[in-house]
Image (cartoon, rainbow, N blue to C red; front, side, top):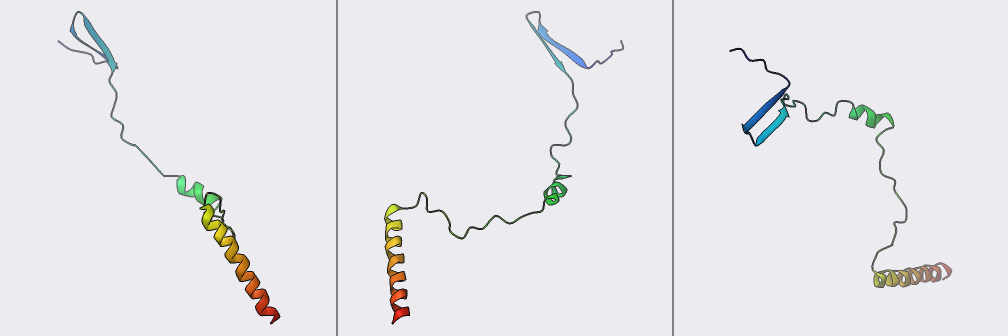
Length: 84
C-alpha cells in the first residue's frame, strides 16, 4: 500500500476527536545582524550629547537649597578677594 504525504496531515484518535495541522520544516535561522552595522555607520556612531549643566530636576530639595547658598558664599568670597 503506497501512501502519498501531503502538506496537511489529519490526526484522529476517535470519532469524537479530529485535529488537522500543517507539517512544516524547522526554522533554521533565528536572527541575523548582516546589514545592521553598515546601517549604523551610515549616519555615524555619535557620542551622546554632553550638557554643561545637568538638570537638577528630581534632586533632593534640601541639598539644592544648600548648594545655592554655598554658591552665593563662594562667589561673595571671590569678589571680596578680588577687591582686596
